[in-house]
Each structure stands twice: as structure tokens, then as C-alpha cells.
Image 1 (cartoon, rainbow, N blue to C red):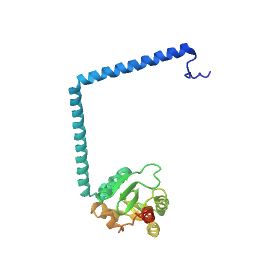
Image 2: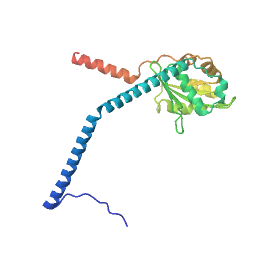
Image 3: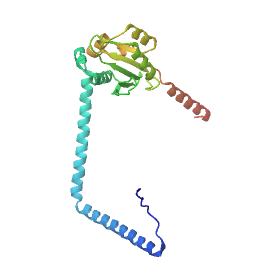
Image 4: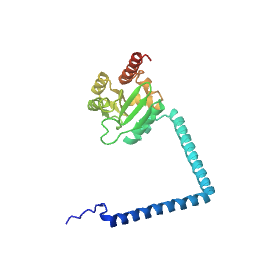
Length: 238
């Protein structure tokens, strides 16, 4: 048997309205007395409250300073980051993705690891104020393993339409088939094989030098917005 839901209803008749008024008045009185009592306690205990507030502020400042110092130390360590191929070969897939993200940060990108199930051919996404957005697809494999053309197809199909990337790169600690390299170069999908990875990760060469990435012009939407703004100023005489 279904349970009936209880719904509030409006008072009926003078008696019910009077009872409802008494309940509301009692609730308001109780709240007022509670607020007054809390105010009295606060006035009497203000030195304790000041000490607690100062302690809380000191703790917050300490945490903020500690976090800033940790970020600075990490940034300084990333500037000197070198990862040998032996270390990379010993990594699992997730560690490899984190390593690629750190290498991007070292080279001046803001980067984050996004790889997970259903990542649509993007394991790391980076942003650069002069080079736009980059998508890295990581393929960690055994030494001697090869990445085929199908990976290039997947990255090409999602890098721009899904992730709005200006650059797409497939990175492996193995190698690529000849067809994969040819297809990638024809369709602007960059690739980093074992030799290039050594140059990037172990020798410390920046990614933009390794792949000869040009500075990109402003995005089309930004240029259109600038044109509209200039047109508006001309029309309004500004």
C-alpha cells in the first residue's frame, strides 16, 4: 500500500489562525532570545575570539606561504628536470603521462594530465601564450614496440574538434611505423619516437625546438572580436 505524503495546509477558521500566530510569535521570541544570549557571550568573550581569529589568520598565512614555497621549489626543480629513457621504460602508463606533463611545464607550458578511460585520444593537455593549446597522446610500450597509423587517425579526429587543440603530438618510448610517420607529417600530427624522446626528456631540449614549433597568431575569434571593437569605435566616434 502506497504511503500518503503529508502536505502542509493553510489554517482554517479563527481558532487555527490564532494558534498559528502563537506558534510564530513563540518561535520569533525564542530566536530573539538566542541571538541576544549569543551577543552577550560574544561581548564577554571577545578577547578569546580575537585570539582565535588571530590564530586562524596566522595559520592561513602560514599555509599560503608554505604552499607558495612548495610551488616555487617544484618550479625550480622542473627547470632542471631530466628523465632518462631507462626511467621512462620502467614507468607505467600513468607515470609516463605525468612525466610528459612535467616536461611540458619545464618548457614553459601550463599542463595537466587528463588521460583516463574515454579520454578521446588526449592524455595531456597544455597551454602556451605564444603557441596555443597542445594535446599529447602517450603510448608507453615495451622497448622495440611500434605505434601504428590508427593512433594517428584517432588523434587527428579528436585533437581539433573535441579538444580545440592547435597542436597534436603522439609520444612513445618505442617507435612508429613508416606509414604512421608519413601520415602524421601529411596531416600535421607531430610524433616523438624513442630518439626524439631522449633529446627532449634526457638531454633537456625544449619541445618547441625539437618539433620546430612556430609562434602562432592570435586565434580567429580573438581577431574577429578585435575587428568588431575597432569598428564600433569608428562608428561611435570614440
